[in-house]
Picture: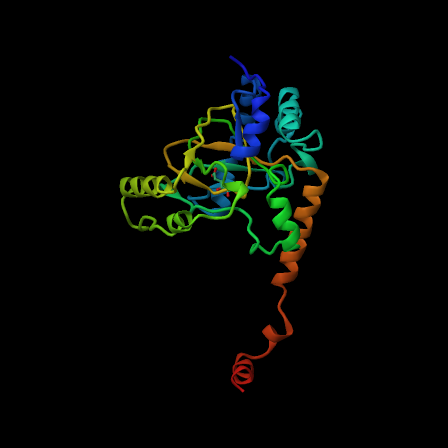
Length: 275
Ligand SMILES: O=C(O)CCC(=O)C(=O)O
């Protein structure tokens, strides 16, 4: 059965922080997107090595964006996103300026640490503003749209609406597998690590599903080299959210600029600080 919108999805998304539109992409579009992304793993590995996990932004690479534009304009998808978020949230805004492709590693299993994408400490343009918009379930959003079955993403439902629990911060720090462990040991340890987060759920996605989720909820990814992955990683911004990211980028660039103090010779700085 194809995708059908249910009104309960609107409330589910706000309280859980994620939602999956099952089989919303038609097979013909999946085929076109698979063709358009066929060389993405090679491009990503040439650029970042065999364990590359993403190619981003797609607009910076020699990929046919035609099928991506058809995905962004898909009537069922535009309708579902506008009902769960608002009609002002549009996929493909700014011609996929932040969209990427999530890929499987070529050599060995690995996982990222549990994280929230953005926190007050992420160099946000205005901390008070961030506190307010971050508790609005519709302000930030992220998308995973798999072109092949994808079981990599893990998520803690409801965590977008609250601060961290102590058991969660402890789970983040649990040990990850050693670099030189065997593939099977790494696979087992990464799985145990992701499962150790209280209330964590795995997003079990099939080709053509569309997961919408809050990027500042607890999330992680667990990756196996023998499970092909090509998943569109995207967002559906409003003009205000695009502006927020622009201000965030500018603030981070300013924060990264060396200060006069940084430019002083190290010995002089050491003397000054002890005098
Ligand atoms: O690979 C994934 O699906 C996880 C993505 C993730 O953790 C992130 O975007 O920060």
